[in-house]
Image (cartoon, rainbow, N blue to C red; front, side):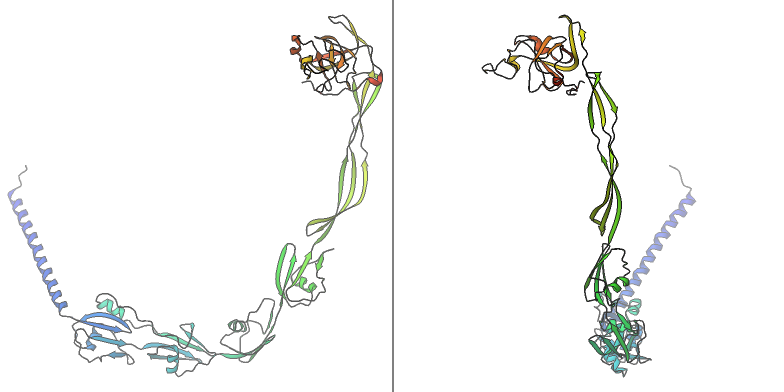
Length: 508
């Protein structure tokens, strides 16, 4: 522990005692003040002040009504009403009613009057001002239209909670602002609007506003004389020439308008609808205008166009006796022809409605494609395991194999194992497409050996052959491939030879 020098410890202790003594004295003073204030307030008397219909609670030491009014700073004018009177004695719980006169500026006939009044309605105020509005005159209260029965004073507000004094009292007792009341005198004018004729009255300043105030609708196509912006004067004659409603349908638009023109042609000119060429108007342009008339304009346009159409060419096969069989040569490539035509198209509102061929000719004839095929038979010799053969034709074909059991007939079928030629099924009989290889044609198939075209089949089409085997020959399951086949000489008569073979099936 650090020792504090004795002089410093003494002065610190003294300062602490003085500080506590000062706070105690301050508390005593504040308490005494609050007690005095409470005693002062306890001696005030409650008063209900009704100011311009608003109840206000208040407490006061004043003994007279006038003292109370001075205390709250409420100035009383000569036209104000105070009950009881200002010199009346004030007792706690009394009710003091003050109805202050309202300040008004009344404007009429070019004169501005200032007055204070207790009038409840606009009519009462004007009566006090010596003014008698006419049945068509307009009354304006603060610039807004009002009736003679319109109230002038604001409705009474509910009493505020608690007591008020000083600043709150001053705010509550402020005198209402001056109210402006005006009387606009109506002037007569004469309206000529078809069957609507007669004298009307208005407070408006222009022709347009006068018609609007009377609920008279003026359309854009109507004519008003004098114009809507003309300043109104008493006895002015206003003439309204009415337009009629019409409708125009043109270019995908529906134009609803009003007009005073005499016929359809003038109406289209008025609306800037121009007619071109063969455009049609329904009804006709000289048709008189009638109310709610509907006019339709159909745009008609013609267009001349050139059309081209390709003429397909044909492929022709031609024999060449000098060319060896199964050879072909394209000697003319071929090309399409061309047809041209001149066509007149008619459109209505953008949709084609007619098409007329004015002229048509062949610009270029088609050129056929010419393929020459060989018909010359050349005999050749082929050495085979079975000995040399002489053949007159060599071609590629898809080879499959079959037996009597796989031919599609059951064993109890009377034609079981019988070929198209009526032969008993055996090795060496080959099923062919007879339009490609004539029946009874002798042939040689490498890997199979000699054979004869002696059968057909529903699935044997084009370059497809089916090699026959006995039922117990396992080699039947080894065939499904493309092979070279040789047709053995002699060649059949030319009438039985198919010089241009089909290209199906295709070898992959």
